[in-house]
Image (tube, rainbow, N blue to C red):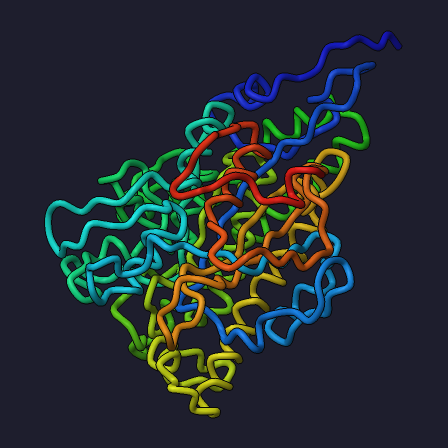
Length: 450
């Protein structure tokens, strides 16, 4: 057999399937033979949780590599070598700065932009371009989707949502331009079809017609996939088979959820939602995380923002015994019972992120796993929900960024160190060095030298 330096170009590979295209995982056949391994693709993620955290239950004991995971962060301990807990971060532009109340709107608007939002409930909303969209402008040239903006909670109605601030500031953390907030998508079916279906229409009738016509995306491309498998080596055939199994499982789960919701005549505790959304937050969250794994794995996008809940969310968490609203509980005035409930919610949200870390770690990607090649910020724009503070932000950096980030550390920085400094680091890791962002004063130490 003659071995050449030729490889299957990724985009030609996709077009080779004809009109029924499907994104594929990274295969050995896509890497030129007899050449050095290609540099890992770095994906960026931003997972937002609202209203801060109970600091005494969040902050780890110790510094550096010898730190002890706190009760709230315990679910991340199995992934210690890919975890950095960052203390001392702040977004000072989320403070009132003369604008009065509205801290929850500002925490959402400022978290990824570093820009103080204009206080208005109607026309004239203005903030700044978010770091995920700055990255997407660069990485989007290599992917079918520049970015994904996802969530698990219905957006608030138009108008004001927090003390004179527009709901636009609480409904999203992603801003394409200073005047263009990007809406989040919370329907797993819509996300799935955007990633793997032909049309991108959000019209329910059109989606139903497309599903009835094709029945299954896998059936639609089965013939082409079968022909393709005969041309691949054993290793690539196994990868492709495992990949198709994971798509089939996602489709099965989404269809099952639709069937269950269609049979459930009991009213939901919130406004009517699309039937593909699970009833429980936990099932919904895990399914959205699974879709993010698929989006990264197929290189459909390299930038994702995900809101576990909108800014100032008052969602209850009945599956863990919390019937009170999250936001209401954060105004605990140091009531031990309320403090304990908020801490329990903090831990529960981290549990969901722990599930995601497990999925990333078990998913092969090039010469490692997705967890090795992502850089994901999990955090909030509020430090202490009771005080409405915007310093000591609960912040965790997850993933190895293709070998560029050393994990397993609790890094303590000086109080009011701009969170935007971290974002400069992340833009570097994604191949987009920037000299300024928001109120950044420079890159974070201990991340730039690895």
